Image (cartoon, rainbow over all chains, first blue to last red; front, side):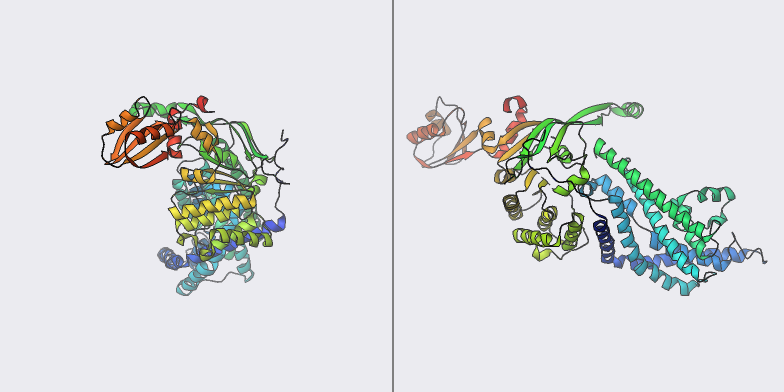
Length: 288
Length: 342
């Protein structure tokens, strides 16, 4: 059927090394892009400090209002010092793991900008995850660290029960970052099906504060709520790494807690891959 | 061996339907719509067929909603047709997207493929990695594009600080860094001033000649077509109305011309009309000594009209104005009947 046509266009696959080089480039560029907006984050340091301060005063008051006694010194299994550490690490962790993949992707989809990505030999999910990594590197250096530098002298951060937990907490927050990025990617893909996804994105953001444990530790909740959140991926975004720091890791052991996060990271990326392919097929079949 | 002249793109009976909901009127209609929406099929692209040879530059034109963008979407692989086939060098765009995207470049006038907050050159280096362009090739191609488009001055500026004309030049360079075989341009000169338009057109001509790039462009600006494309495909209501060269297009429509006559001394239009009595010519007075005769070259030769006018009046100057492509195309849209033209 081709007959007297022009010479066939060669087929082509990207090798592993080239892939690594490409997606590292996305990490680098996302970092540079954030750097261009670094001024914006100075005000962020202030607002995070205010969040931490608000929670600090709230929990201090709650703990102070309890009658004296050994049992009263703990609330939801945490002492006041642990509670303060929980507040600081939750918010500092959020400043690190947060990204706007959901908003960016849904905007690109609803405006049709995604076409520009689709006509390139790119794996969009990997691209967005790489960008999230670059953004996180920026956030860690120029956002999370400054927040800690301000907040720790103000409110005091109790050390973890074992020095090795510093390292494990850091690793756990890295996994938290991946889980959060994959959740955001999935939410962003909804824009392929929904006309107005900004409401969903906003609702998700508010729900996340609650379901990840940033606002209140799960141990404050009734038993059935704890059971529900234990089966959801959101705890892997904040609750798990913070509890690892406090030496109160959820699950039987430290390894269990980390494996749970890794399983969610992997599971959600497989789900994201499936959902992305399905969405692209949907949009190429239905038209955008 | 030169591949020019052989068909690179083969489109056969390409159709794309959309299901659209048609709303009923009033509150009652709104409620009924919610319960039982009324769906209708819209034939956005309807049995479109054409070949495009390797190295050809083709203008794809039509009114808004004529089916241009839908066709481009299918040709770039981001939309699956309802029926029909597209074969580009042995690849099916939407099925072999992963392979196919390596060989195409595209500029969608209103969208950017550059990173808004970063220096232009950063986007270019990223594109180099995306398309796996070897360093030597990348440098050579960037040098060539720089020479043609004059990018040097703003290569290190962030994209958001560029003017539209500068940005469009960067978009074109971005689409061509990997020296694609095919270039799709959707409204490449939209919003540009005259100078910027001209430099984009010159560039496209150069790149086609030097690299043999096959170019398909949609545009509202018929100046683009006039200056760039020997061949045009006109689409309306999803169907091809005309496929051929510009001259053929003129010949197939009424080919109306306007003869501008400047007289030495004032005279009423009626006198001029009397001179061309019996010929299908309409006269109108433009301003003072200037009169205009409208006629179709199908019905009457320009020389005949000129001879009669010169014999009857003292003429200072004469000018024969051909219809612009825009007017020709408008005429075709008005008729809208494919049968007569193709």
